[in-house]
Length: 277
Image (cartoon, rainbow, N blue to C red; front, top):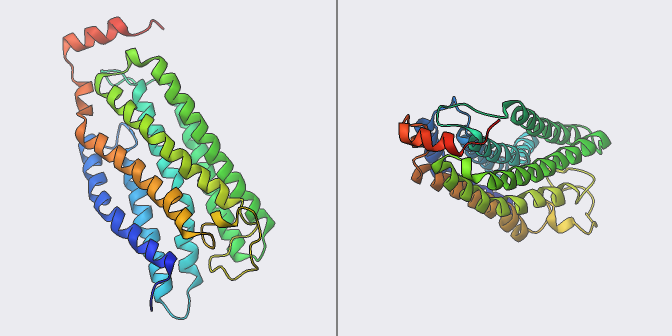
């Protein structure tokens, strides 16, 4: 069975993210999982994109149509923003670490992690409800609430980034370079987040096969399933890919572990510049 445009884009997504599976695995091995700097979530995001693309390709290749595959594929597509935002959150959290491994604001960042997880749960539950129960208003409300939380989390990330720049003098040496990478990635992440908002509010229902009534909303062209594929390609796929490339290159090139080296001169330099609490 020949793939339609959505199937082709799903296949392209698989091809794009399989290499990043290995790159992100390397990053996790390089930095470990204990510090929670966001690299694990970059791996999770890559897995979600490969798995989601595979489900959508399989859904178009199987006859008769298996709705469960469509639901799974589009649910993963919609939820992919969560690990990308939380990855950025983790990388920003690393700005508040000291050379001896002490981390500040752990409780505040944990609350923001919970916010991202709540948004993810609302999005997936909303999609599940709408596809299980025709025209489920509760599912639509949950989807929209989830994407609003994603948007709020992004705004908070920008605020944290601006705050870190005002305190950049006390950020560890190579974390300063990572901060530059995050700052470059944030505009791409903004467009991706905006697309999620526009797509979610483009329709009051979520149809995985596009067989419902015609969508006459002014935002119809932004719909992830029935909208214009060119917009989806640019605002969704390419923006995500740009963020992943920026983070992956930064993680590979920058010797971030050297920030934790117990060099006396570096410790003294940091302590002298560290603000008194």
